[in-house]
Image (cartoon, rainbow over the protein chains, first blue to last red):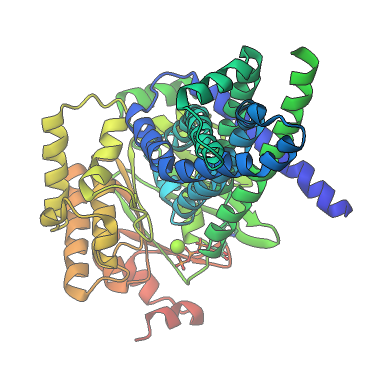
Length: 252
Length: 259
Ligand SMILES: Nc1ncnc2c1ncn2[C@@H]1O[C@H](COP(=O)(O)OP(=O)(O)OP(=O)(O)O)[C@@H](O)[C@H]1O
Ligand SMILES: [Mg+2]
């Protein structure tokens, strides 16, 4: 247990050091736009099918599940508002981030891990190219910007899924549904929820990169890097979420 | 001394009495594994130095210390008049821009085509080359290693030997002053190996480059090397010309030459 705790602290320290380098490098001249665009494509665009399916199911299931409880109080008309609120404030950001931790963190961890193991990162370094800037900064900026966009997209798809769910019991006009949704939403629901997704995105990227860069030699360490990237990133997402909720509670 | 070293680097000239590369009592260990136990040697400008040694004797580690990929625990490594163990990243990169490094396994960038692999270094180092110049350089480098038709292939489509040769092309494309070959002929057939040996010889003449060649291949050592050092247990066991080493009386070194 003691050893375990110690390892956790070492990991946190190392990731902090690794991240602090990010902030030093990101503002230096010579941002790698082409690599950044390539990463945005593979991180953002290629995640769309996955996020569409999960977002839709989240909205649908949440609606169906909350109907009995709401019906007991005769508050079925509140369902759209309640579902969209919980989607936007909590469920869509966290689930989408977790899905992305699984798809993106592990992908980055495996990619950079195999580059490390096959000395491609060393090759960049001896060519006087800064591998941190080329690989880590581009990927982390891409995840930091793409995850919030994916989350907002998941919000919309989820609300659409909710509409289908509501419709299963008697037809509801789509205009009426959306007006119910927007009536219950306030600015303060959107803002903190969106801010935290930037943090989710940052850590999804940086943890994947960290694990990849620290893969030791041997092919099995590539799998290990991918695996620990998912575990650490998912855990970090929950911790950030908890902190974000506390802060939101305090300030809004 | 310090100012002199600076001037030297700027003009690209090196005083003749000072070797271009100098290892002085270099130590390196990984945990309990003492890989380098105080090795000292030097390479003069225009010279090809061969490092011979069994697998695991620390040959790759030594050259990685030289380019700053691995930090030596102790000792001095002077390259072009500067101690690379004490340089910061920027100063180190100044030196790295003049070094071509062939990795043991090629280390090609998997996600890029052969062309992009070669262009990558040229396009990223503020060398300010035009697109046409880059293309010409790529074609020339690939022709040198006899793989001009592989230009649009991905590394995964290449054989081990081809990857090695592309790695060599990538190391040479920057017209380096110092070239480090980590086992340039390992895994190649005899004919290709001979071509690579010829290439190494011609590079030496054409660019007056200084090289360190790590090899197991005695033919390669014989035809490309001016001087040989033999590494064993982290120290330099023997040093001299090919004939010197071949005629060495030490049992262990003799066993190296047995067919
Ligand atoms: N990054 C590292 N971490 C831990 N040990 C290492 C590392 N790199 C090398 N070693 C160890 O250093 C020793 C020398 O390795 P090196 O790669 O230099 O051998 P070599 O002489 O190049 O052998 P080969 O001819 O097989 O390439 C080996 O025992 C290896 O286990
Ligand atoms: Mg080696």
